[in-house]
Structure formats: C-alpha cells, structure tokens
Image 1 (spheres, one colour):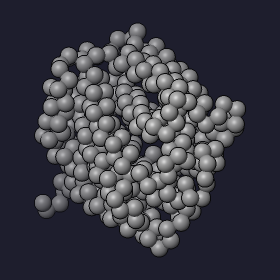
Image 2 (cartoon, helix red, strand yellow):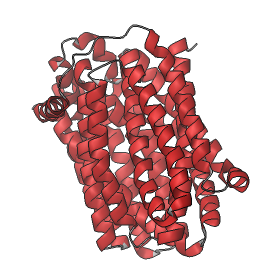
Image 3 (tube, rainbow, N blue to C red):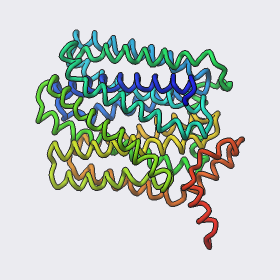
Length: 422
C-alpha cells in the first residue's frame, strides 16, 4: 500500500511523462518537417550545452531550499514556456521550431532532476528501492498513453496545439508535488549557486565511484544524439510533413514505451536481483554495440528504429534505475549537487560532443564507435562497483541508514572479492 506522498509522486510522474511525450512528438515533428535532419546534431549539441547549465542550476536550487516547492515553481514556469512556444510558432514557425527543440529539453531535464531529488528527499533508501521501479513504470504508462494518442489529439488541436495539452499536464504535475510542500522536510543549507556547483564537482571528484560513473554517463550522453540523428534522418526521408512525422513518432514512442513497461516489470527487477547494479551498467552498451553493427550493415529506417527502441527500453528499464540507485549512495545533503554534476555537466558534455560529431559525420559507423566507448567505460565501473559502492557508504555520515541502497547481488560480489587473494 503506497503512502499519500508516494501516490502524489506517482500521479505527478504520470502527468509529467504525458506532457513530455506530447512535447517531444510535437518538437521533433515540427523541426524535422521544416529543417530536416542535416542540422539536427548541432541543435542537439546546443541543447545539451544549455541543459548542463539548466540542470546545474536546478541541482543547486534543490540543495538550497524546500524541494517540493521548487518542483512546483519549475512546473508552473515550464507550462508557461510551452504556452509561449505555441504563440511563437504562429509568428515565426521556422525559428520557433528550433527554439522549441532546445526549450523542450531544458524543461524536461529540470523537472526530471527536481522530481527525483524530491523522491530521494521524501523516502529513505529502503523505500526508494521499492518506489523507483513503481514510479518509472507509472511514468512509462503515461508516456505510452500520450504517444499513442498523439495522432488523435493532433487531429483535434493540431501538432502545434499539442504544446497546450502538454502545458496543462505539466501544471497538474506541479500541483501534485507542490501539495507535499506543506509537510516537513530536512533543512537544506543555503549556499551561493556557484559554490553549490563547485561542491558538486568536488564531491564527485573525491568519490572513486562517481569518478567512474562520470565516464559512463558521459558515454551515454554521447551515444544518444548520435543514434537519434541517424534515426531522425531516416524518419524525415520516409515521412514528409509534420502531421505524418508526429503520427509516426507517436506510434514509435508508444510501442517503445510498451516494450519499456514490459522490461521494467520483468527484466529490470529480475536483473537487479540476480546480477546487481554493477552488472546492470553493461547491458545497454552491449546492445548498443549490436545496434551499431546492424546499422553499419543496413542503414534503413526499420533498423534505426529498432536500434533506438532497444536503446531506450534498456535505458529506462536498466540503465537509468542503475544510475539513480548509485546516485542515492551519496550523502543526503550532496545528492542534488552530485546529481546536477552527473546529469548536467557529465552527461550533457557527452551529448554536446556527440551532437557535434553527428552534425559533422552522420554515419552509422559513428554509432558503433560511440557504443564501443560506452561499453569500455561501463566495464571499468563494473570491475570495482561492489567495493566502491560500500566505500561510498562508509564516507556518508549515516552509512547504516543508507545500507539498503546496496543490493544483495552487489554485496555477494563484495563478499566474493573480500574472500579472494587480493
């Protein structure tokens, strides 16, 4: 039985994913229909650079004040930006479609980080391990519902009108989490934003675990825009026109979300139980290498779609939960700042490099090369994850309370390592 705060968070995440699906389908379709995929990599690179700043500010603010109230304010601001974007599309369609691609990534990244900081703030480690799969499953259900509904909703309100629907769902998510602001939460020390950024970087640099995790999330960030650029080029060629593109992207995201829900229900929990968090970092890059090889052999839409779908399914069902569980090992007062550095500076720096590379060399071999680099970083983390995870807890002021964040499979690996000759 979920508590009232847990139900509020679940409802908010469903609404948040509904809004993101409508926003992303509209933004991608409008951009590809008006500009094609030639400049997509550079736009994704610019967006990633700004996301690093956006997430850094969000993480710093999350550690300065009351987390639910911050999420409420960010949600209201994001809803207002989507309404403004709808108006801008009527006045300057070409320029506004580029700006929308960038704005959509900023709002999504800020709200996602703020939401997960609220979850880490409101629920202790044992509750978090139980709630993370439930919340990600609920969010995936919302994403699937909105994706399949994209064609029908766009037929009524137009592709541009999808932004107004997304604004309404974003405001609803803000209200659901904002209601938690009346409940007491741990006090957060106020520090200047630049100090918070430096502390996040310093905390990450001091941790052997997070130093290796930085390489993994940077590789994940680089792989994403490279693969999406290959997919976008094939989709724009096969489906001309914003309406057809939005409908295709909606079907694609809907089917991907259904596969993600199945993976989250079956694959994710079973994999974490039997193999642990450290091994979870290997699954997605291994599939990425296979996908890159397949694209090199057959650079077609069906292959690109299958590759992107597989990458997204494993990212949502295995990769992202593994990152969140590793992130929760940080000391509570530093979670926002460490999360901001990992999801902001590290991942977005990788995405910046990947986007520029995709804009210069839009070739399937680039997908394969990025996947190989990701796999190498994951192997380096996996090799010492068990001892590094427990070592991170020993650095925390309250390691016993955080101990449930280390899964049993990781503890088994640690016992095996401690019983060896090294």
